[in-house]
Length: 439
Image (cartoon, rainbow, N blue to C red; front, side, top):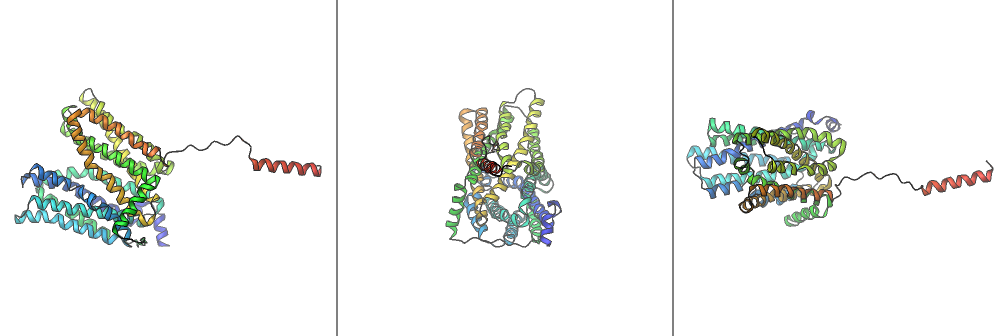
């Protein structure tokens, strides 16, 4: 009875969801601070070489490639996910705390920073795999779109607040001590997760071994037409988006002559668009459904890249147009990502939810490195503007995956003009009765 009453309340009034959302928001914001503080530590204090910086940067995506699929299989084996999530946050906190400790003791090195980044990244991959399945326990099915939108808003909030907070902390505390903030955020997240009271009742599917479990998640993701469409669209979008991001700053600085400060402001506007998108998605989904929203939002993804590639004129005109475009793409990304997660959870069998989510994460995030490398190398050959226009055309291809799948919006069938045979037979019989009775 108590659980039923809890589920009938709006999400903002549900204690356990608030704890889960707040824990994730704090953790993500701490990670955003660290994303600036760790490289600054490597450059300013340890004089890291370009090769070392490349390895340090790669640690953001390497854990997904190495452990993403296995994390999903692990999540599907568990009856309770919250203890694993808490353990991941505690491990990440300990790793983050080693940076200021090593700095104080004179033992801080670039290899240590790389190891810390790898541990934190791995803990994050395992956490996300468990959190996706755990969300179904805390949030009832009817409210999952709103819940997913709330988590997407967390990323938007972190993208706005994180860099500014990181710059302030680095300036006041120095870079190594700024990393301490990330450790504190992980610790606070673990304590909030520990306070969640909703009982877990996940029934794990039968395991046939780690490798077979991983293959099963891959098989379902590829053979289910809806999941296959989402997977293909996500890979295509991320590949061309990362190819664009790899050269976007160079293009804005050297071709469009956008001041550096304004580039940061445009990034913040994208985050604001994400917050607006999270608010709008839940309302639009109630009216049109997640599948229809995905189909229409994906058609608008090329607008932002195409705007950057074609915009011209005075600086104020370029800034105004790009600001509107940034706001739009922030809204679209949040809307599409929210609906994608909800539809994936709905389509995946319960016993393989973690593996399907891990497969999506592995493929969609794993292609980022390839897209960035392709964009940079291609720009050397054909130029910056050409690559941007190619990326705009490439994102159009993502829509084909959605519109050639069961997610495609379908028109309601028109009423048939042919007479209903059953009704015709009934009327005929009725007429015969009237004739026989002389009515």
